[in-house]
Length: 204
DNA sequence: TTGGTGATGTTT
DNA sequence: AACATCACCAAA
Image (cartoon, rainbow, N blue to C red):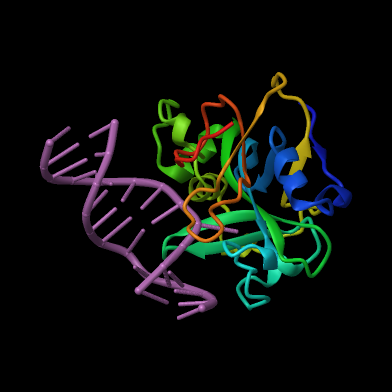
């Protein structure tokens, strides 16, 4: 299996482009119990000050500080008093833009992911192993400690590669679970992939 | 299969 | 009081 770590340059591109191009790439996390790998199948773009649904809409705070770093960092936030979600920071320093990872197809060390999620170890529930932003964080063991991780380091990164995936079509829809900024079609997903989140909007 | 609810940090 | 959520249980 070939897994090439993406360069900084990739993350410095326009956020909508990064959100689309992350589809089919791999989230890799070096954990104590192995090298966890999953294919990114669903993302959402959040465009900083321009975007009322973005955490960065009202400018820099202690919570969203990582969003304002240069592209290629991991922004992890805690939400609804229970869950963590992971975002890929994009563009140059000070923009406050990022891409939310919404769903992942488990690829390697799947058993370790099942353990973290408390799912059946025979794989019968794998369809929901990482089919949502908080689920994928739990599967990969991503918590507050991972906030601010540099994706060019040795702990967490994104890789290009080919692991038995044919060409695919990109679906586009409005974003899930927000009210402000709902008119924008800034959700992207691999059409027909069985590991998508159960979020409702489904378009083109 | 759908719908209501609990858990409860962070910002408004 | 709202929120970039998910799991659970009850009702239909």
